[in-house]
Image (tube, rainbow, N blue to C red; front, side, top):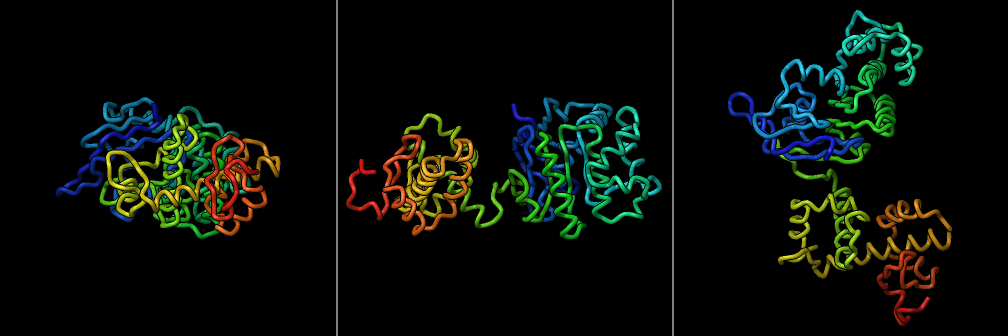
Length: 360
C-alpha cells in the first residue's frame, strides 16, 4: 500500500469554484514530491487536504493508513501534531518568542517541551548561534530554517511545505533546499508546493496541476523528452520479452500514463493499434537510446571495471547525453560488441556496417 493515496478527490468552494477535480495520486513512503502549477491550479488545496486542514467533498484521502475524511476534528488535530510537519512561505513564527522557544512550542503541543532537544534541532539547521534571537532579528532564510526545525522536532513521517522558498533570495533558497534534501535522505516523505522550476527539479518526482486536475509528470521540454525516453526504454524491454521490465525500468513503467502515451501517439512515436507499437520514427529513437545505454554499460563494466551498482546509474545518465559521433567512437573502441554485460543485444549502428553479428 502506498504511504499516501488520493483517490478521485474533488473539492468545491463557494460560487461553484472547483479547486480540485477528480484528482487521483499515490505517494510512496520517503518520496519527495513537488506539486507544480500556476496560481489557482489547486496546489495549496491539495496540500491542505493532506494536512487535514481541509476535507474533500468527494473521494478519499488516506495517509499512512488513516482515512482523513472519516476522522473527527480532535483526531485530525492529533494527526497533524503527531504525524505531519508544516512549513509555510510566511513562516508563522510567534513574534515574541525566540527561535528555541518557537521550536519548543511545537514540542509542547505534541508532548513535552525540552529545551536541549530544541536547541539541537536548531543547530542541525545551522542556527546554533541564533537560539535567543526573535524572528524580527533574523533574516528570511533564518526564519525559514527555524520553521524547518519546528516541523522536524516531533519526527513526523510527512513534511508538507507550501512555497517554502518563495520569499527567499538565491543563496538562502539553496540552503533551505539542501536541508530538504537531508530530510529526504533520512527517509521522511516531503510534499512540496512550488511554482519554481528550479525548486521542483530538486524533488524526486514532480506533478503538474492545471485547473484542478493532474496534467502530467513533466515540467519542461527537456524533462518531457527524458520522460518519453524512459517510456521508450521500458517498451523496448517489453518488446524483447523481458519479464523484469517493470523492475528494470521502474521509472518508465510509472511514466507510461495514458496522457503521456497519447502525446507519444500524437507525435508519431507510437502507431495506432490495439497494442503499444513503435512507429518507424519511434523505433529508431528507441533503438538509438538502447544502443547508447548498453554501450555505456559495456564501457563502464568491461573497460573501467566499475561496480555493477554504479554501472546502471551511470549508463542511465550517459544514454541521454551521448552524441551520435561519441556513440560510434565508443562502439569502435569496444570493437563493436554484439551484446552488453547482461547478454542483451546491442542494436547495430552505421559504424558496424560490414561486421558479422558475432564479431567482437
